[in-house]
Image (cartoon, rainbow, N blue to C red; front, side, top):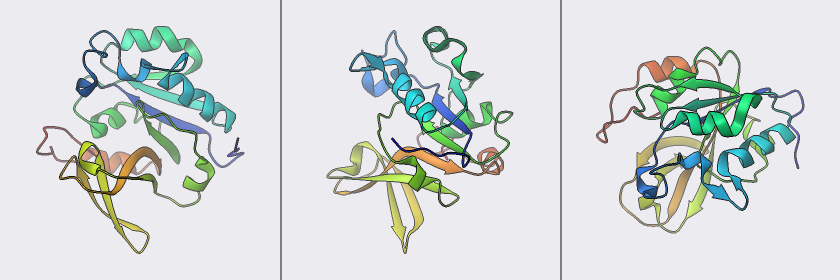
Length: 188
């Protein structure tokens, strides 16, 4: 396991959404609580972050929030996204927690990655190559720089947004200015 040492002390996990594509599994359980092995996805995430040396973790809750707070207890700080209208509104719910560079995770991703590579440059976004990008947020880049993010468009192979970011606190200002997408969400 890798250690971030003094490089990073905070992380935010976005776990407010319902996960409609996972119904009926999410009818009574937030997608972040769906199990991988014998533990919920979000529990795996928190354990990895703790092993990496991340001391402060915030979880943005919304849909069935009491299930998440009951499962995780007082190990993390909670912020409620009352709108549940995308990643921008979820991030804004935790704005008071964000005062330094931080890791941002989608609450429905399972990973075991070397996050120390992501936090070398600010801002950073983890990407993953797949055979069919149509079910994901695909990304395009040129010369190592992100040029476009497209939410669930046409298929084909390519790179997708892996739901792991390293961001500066100024991302809050960006989130405040995000316009509603054609999908009716406020997406970073």
